Image 1 (cartoon, rainbow, N blue to C red):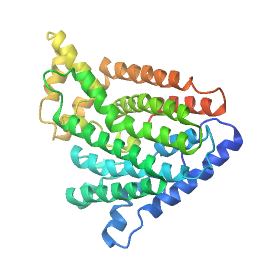
Image 2 (cartoon, helix red, strand yellow; image 1 turned 90 degrees about the vertical axis):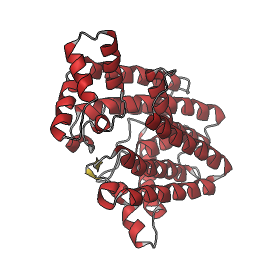
Image 3 (cartoon, one colour; image 1 turned 135 degrees about the vertical axis):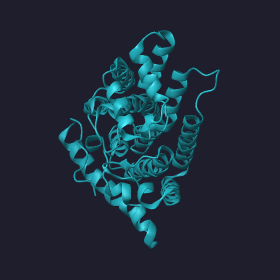
Length: 336
């Protein structure tokens, strides 16, 4: 179990207390959701859950539900549903990216191999699907659409942009599908099940789409700016796998526009080189940490977060809206 529950943004004390109570229930139900008599999956299914996590998606579900009634039936189940889906996707992502660490622990595929990690992810997706069915047909519909987007996002990231695609637009679309879709689901389901109404649910869906992209752009910064002990991930792992990130896209665009820039050319040469060697990867990470592309990405994340906050301003004034604004800033300005 995580060492501590995620911090609840500044909010009315009564609502904050209720959210903390619901978060405790979420943790308990997460463990119940992966409980099984199978000796193998009993350990593999809990691996990333036991490693902790920020629980961003359950928190957003509960905050959105607080626009109505966070104690309403199905709200905690929805929070568990989105986190289970997220956890399942991490098992698959780590195989695709060959990541050796996740949340400060060895990744599942590094311990048990790719096949076990993939099948464990499938197991968690199956449990999440069962949970959506218990909530209702609308939850099933929304969850299945989100699951489709998660798959398409991973597929498009793997295949990459075509010659007709703008690399930046392609990358943002990947972020929207792989990350923002699940945050949109969290906000929309929370508002719907909390009884806040269709209008509030649509606002929260649009907010989730924006804040999800901002969240992932901030993660692009953290992938370079933090170390494994802080972020729980190997620095520059996306570089090693050749996965584009916003800083690398900015650097490559600059190289095309100013091929005489020797420092930029050096970064591109290293990007296209053999990064299996830890020293080579470390040298490239060090160069990118000092490159203006990192700050450009940070600023883009902040602008996108501002767009998310503008969507929130369509909600009625009150402590829940202010808490959501604080939540947004925290996601983008985090250091881990």
